[in-house]
Length: 220
Image (tube, rainbow, N blue to C red):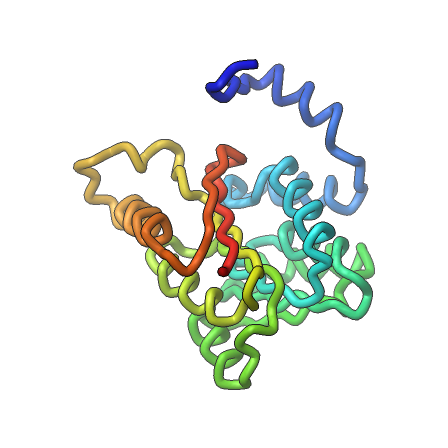
């Protein structure tokens, strides 16, 4: 057994997906439509979606947060995984992208399980806190603008209950986190966030090399 992670080239990744990813027509069609957008790299990878689906089922999650919808892949896969009386609270500011999302949520017959808020996510999260929903949520997924990652995380930590899980995407940022002199705002924000959560005694965390890097934080 090797102690270092295996180098996943394209051929090995194809093998991995062929031997682990369960076929889902709606998810496949959404991936294809999203791939035509110039921002297609913003969609989470299929293996990351499959991993999140399993986490939701293990948690038996009922109420979840989706911070940064894009074309709706993460919200869709979570909505498929929760029970019929569960709810995904999704938030984004882009109407064009979320119109694609809504189309596929409806095709998959999970649109009744997703509440979409078109507004800055900080405003929506603050609204949920004001509505006294702190401690209600089982799971939160953060995949929005990187500049506000700490703000999203802090509000998610307020909204999830003890033992709830927060998943944060793009924490390796294409390897740019290694650029010590980078002045690029998103890179600096990701590095600040990684330091912030690593030193946060309120959670137990693990950073995984899935997709562009995924951190899981369990609220203590």
